[in-house]
Length: 235
Image (cartoon, rainbow, N blue to C red):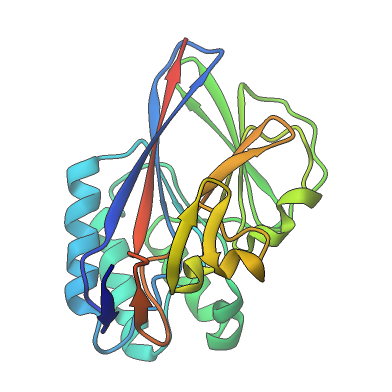
C-alpha cells in the first residue's frame, strides 16, 4: 500500500482482453480524467510516450481533461502528438462543463478528434463494422458487429440500451483511497458508489471503469492512476 501526494506519480496500463464473433483483431485505448494543469507536464509526456508504445487501433477519451488554462495547452500538445492517427473520439465530463465545453471541443476538433455528443460514429476495421456512441446516446438499435458506448459517469450503466457490447467509463477515480479490494469492487468507496469497480458484465455488455489519470486534489492511497488497453480478438 502506498500514499501518493502529487500530480506525476506513474500510472499503470490495465491490459484487458475480449473475444467476439468476428474475424478481425483490434485494440482500444481508453483515457479518462486527466485533470491537466500547470504541474502535470511530466504526466502529459508520459501519456504521449505510452500511446506511441501501445499503438492502439482506436483511442477513446472519457472526459475531465483540464483544470486550468495551462492544462488546456498541455491537452493541445498531447492531441497534436496523436493527430496523425485515425479513430480518435472524445466525450465531455462534468469538469469540462465547468471549464468550458466550447474551449475543450475546439482543441479536440482542431486535432482531428471526433467530439461525440448525441450522435454515433461508424468505422470499419478491415471487415468489422464498429459503432461508437457518445455520452448521451441511450436508445439505439445495433447495426454493427460491435457497439461501443463511451460514458463519463458509470452511474448510467444500468440505464443503457442492452444492444451495446462494450462500455467504458471513468469519473469515480476509484474514490482515490482503496483500503481493500474484492472481486465486486474497491472499498470503502464501493460502500457509497455502486459502480466503484474495475470491470464487469451487465446484460451481456462488458464494462470497464478507469480509475483515471489525474485528480484535482492529487492525493491517493493504494489507488494507482490508470489507462485501459483492451484487445478485442475475433474467434
